[in-house]
Amino acid sequence: MAYSDTIDQIAERVDHLLLRHEELQRTNALLAQQVQALSLERDQLKSRLAAARARVDALIERLPSPATTAPASPEASA
Image (tube, rainbow, N blue to C red; front, side, top):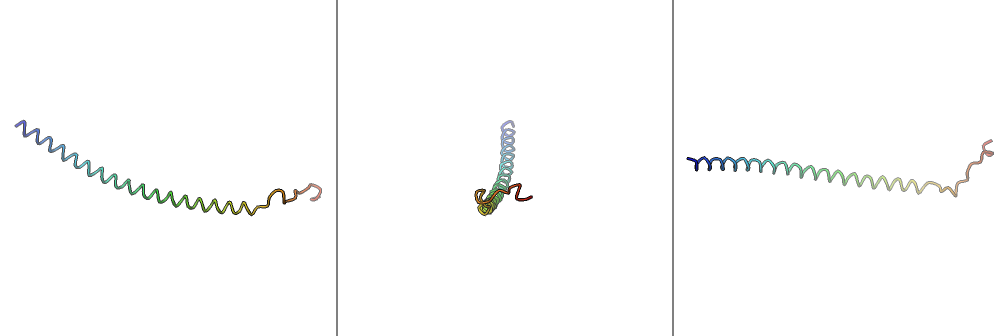
């Protein structure tokens, strides 16, 4: 009888481990999907950031340099 109880306990533990394994596989699959979605979002944000930086750099290039602009003298405005 003790042998049968031991076998039953082992079978029960194996069933529990199989269920836990399936649960962990589902969780892992969901996490992998989240990682993929976040990686895609990160890549899109990096692309948008690069485009924004390029626009800012282009605007900065269009600004007149301080040497080419004459400083306004206080007498000129009076």
